[in-house]
Image (cartoon, rainbow, N blue to C red; front, side):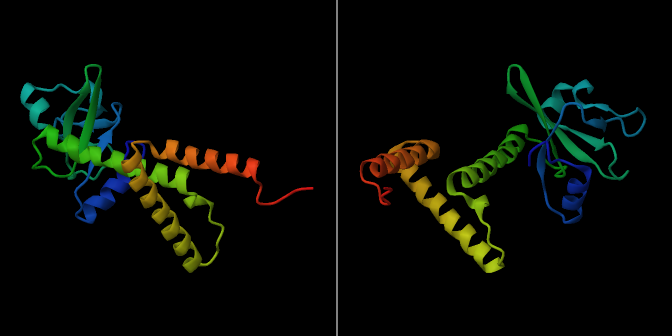
Length: 181
């Protein structure tokens, strides 16, 4: 899940449903790693021991229920960027595994973006549930075909779509299907 969507309500709901989550937290998110002896402070101002950098630390996020604790992991993305990943899996002690689990969200984001931009999935104006399901199913089948063509042609889905539209436009300009007089 993206840090934009990480809310107390959503994380609490996932915890109640007994679902394990990995989510990035913004560096200014207020947390407490002192067990309640110190006030909340931004994640970026926390003190990290070398062991905690490798295995993470247990924190309480502000506005959570008092007994709710999360594991906060320090993930170095590049030399000038650090991400902080929170999980309710308190046994997690491997930052690489946490980064990999959290990284799966990018594939989901990419799928949603491509489905919207390539297939027209959001352009459905149907009112009946059955018609909407048919439209969504058709759009997703188009996405699957596009992805198969992308693998065969070594192009991006956007290049492929642009090529199809460009070829169609050229063909229609040469021999219009509808003649205007």
